[in-house]
Image (cartoon, rainbow, N blue to C red; front, side, top):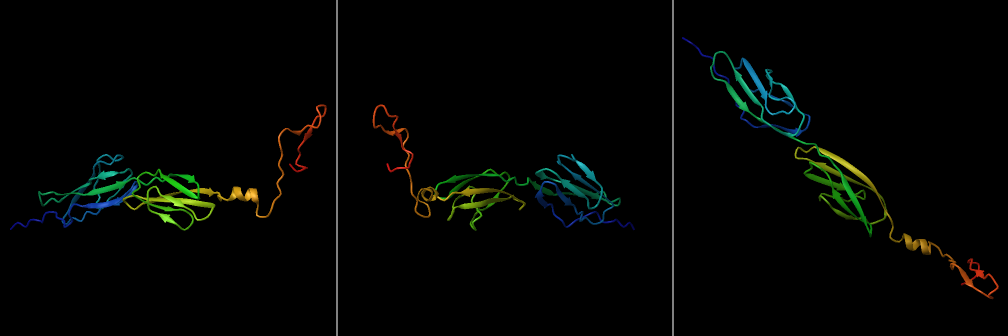
Length: 212
């Protein structure tokens, strides 16, 4: 009577086993029964071209964005069949956040989103208002100094942010400068000679010391 050992098998189907950003450390789980030996092969990694591990549950770091297809082969001496499974690892680039702000009249700003690798955005205008648009226009209720912040998230839900300080002038500042908060007296100065009394006189200059 010859008793044959069962061949390696697993209930785990090929699947996407990890999603993340660059420098993604993935812990692989063999999940295979009746195994004497195992071989992992990490195809396509730009830094570890077709690197191999014989650990049952190795850790592999994916340093660059891309889609990768690691393979596991498992076997034992009592079976001539080799277990094979190919999984998927997806690595996204980290968001890079940048933007320009354009200041318009009436306390209005326009924005230009210069971010890379973002899929969702959240603007915080520093006055309690926010927007999820890519390039929003915003109107402030009051002049003043504000911090505009943009947060970007990628498909792996990793986020990054960038902020800029802006200053909005009160459109009534010029009027207040002329009129003042209280009454003002203005003197008008005429350039050059204001009048001549005689051809031999040098004339009089208006210094503001007398009415025009």
